[in-house]
Length: 169
Ligand code: RP5
Image 1 (cartoon, helix red, strand yellow):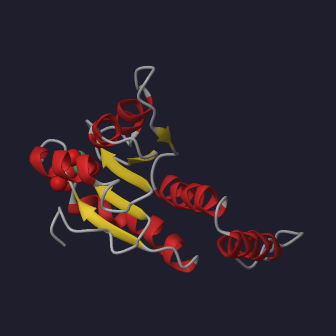
Image 2 (tube, rainbow, N blue to C red):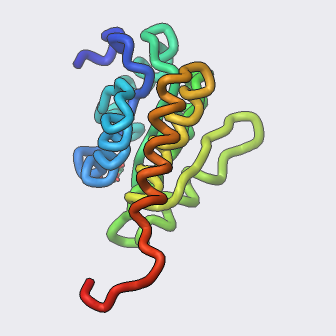
């Protein structure tokens, strides 16, 4: 999809710094798909494609996106730079890095200066899942049908937890 294209009515953009981040960020996409929330996944690197980041973040609201989920690892400047360039809410997912296990990513994303917020999630897959659920919860404030689907997701999750541990798993 060209960076300047409209969102096509999809409210969530999932951006990531590299193809290598998709193994983590696809978990956000799966949650959104399961809740029937339209989303677009794009590779947007703060360092390798800075013009793409600028064009994307500057135009994201006008293109119809409501929420941006941004995943990056290492020197993870993508979520913060995106937040600096758009008024949309940005949820940051620290991708687990090889050298420092994602602590570098977490610190890069969470330590934003006052005035430019990034809602920072956990490192790795849990963070990607929760970024999508948080996006869903925000969108559900103005979408009763989605609120119902989110309630059902929670109910299924609760029902799936056994009362006692098993020896055979
Ligand atoms: C970051 O550098 C990306 O978000 C990725 O997590 C990390 C490594 O990228 P690759 O070298 O795997 O492309 O910009």
